[in-house]
Length: 392
Image (cartoon, rainbow, N blue to C red; front, side, top):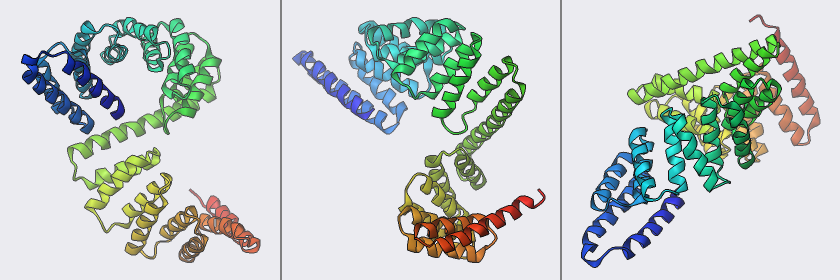
């Protein structure tokens, strides 16, 4: 995106400076300064400030299609959809075949639920740019919203040919085929959506539930609907905690709940930020340092994971799970000697936890000690069977 903005600025400056008369050069210079500052604010995510700068630039020179387009983008970033649409329309009045402005207008119409308006705009996008995967994608989604399912199928299929790992497009294609009573094909599309989609992706499970129900496979339908309902509850809780941390940024309980949920959703990047916020409020709580270590591990940052695990051990030196985590980090780093010491300490503190023995078994096997590997594997099986036998 930054490269795109840089190229846009360079091209715009070239066109602008050579087209301005000498007597207007002073106003034009201020116009350029406002545009440049607007781009800087967009880079920084300060969209409201960018809006002010672009509007100031347009007050001096109103007929700049590119600046109107970027003003629309800034409004869209703030979710001011009507203002975004107005500026895209003004831009297109000056440059009717600007593909990205057309696409941006189509997206805004979709956001405003103006699907009838979105369709012809997006059809123009893919006509002008037959390889525009995003154009096909939003066009197909608009057709699904309009219940024009037979038209949507080839459009979404084309989108997937251009962008084959787009989970949302597989879901929309599945919904189109579901409504066309092509249940087997719909099931395949929903499964592909789950394959390529994020963890805890709820909607394809609903689609699967409906497709299985219409095929008469009630047990499969019930299972998928239960998964869907559970994921919907999780998402609602995630939304609640996200809103709460914004409204009450010093609420440690809310940050703790959010960090836990982000780990469960496998959103490790955001989990790192949430755990760091928890540590800011409670620096001596080993649980947060341990959570941060696990998040870094899943992001494949073993150095940072080791630092966090060691800090957790300093705070709670007799907690077995912390040594197990540190051992796993050492193993990631290719340091079997320190991994062995850490896993042994975990077993010493809690010898009945089966997975600590399993980790030791795997490590001894990699170190060429099959006898000790087998010994700990038997311990793993023994304690695991005892866990399963305990009444729940």
